[in-house]
Amino acid sequence: MTAIQLRAELFREINPILDNEGMMLKLLKYVKKLTAKKEDPTLMTKEEFFARVDEAREQIKRGNSTRFSDREKMNEWLNSL
Image (cartoon, rainbow, N blue to C red; front, side, top):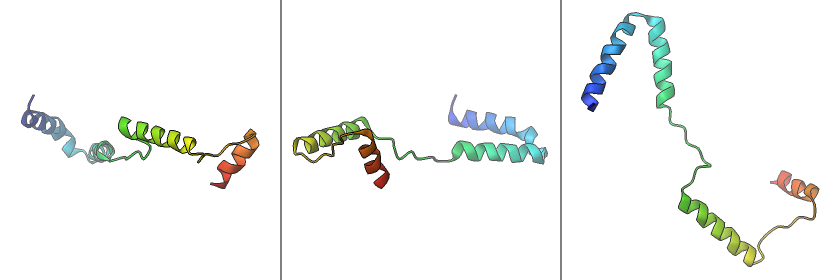
């Protein structure tokens, strides 16, 4: 099905809703939800992930790491961030 055909079918299906304000509001809310752009800052490419892993390994080799003797010390450090 082409984009033009899809658009025509969408408008045919929406047409009965256009006379009902309540349904129009629901449709509008749903369309806004569908089109909302949500960016997840935690997403990264596979290459970015492995580059970060490689960088962390290099830092450990250079001695640039933080070690903890117990869980409490680690939690103190994490809470200080």
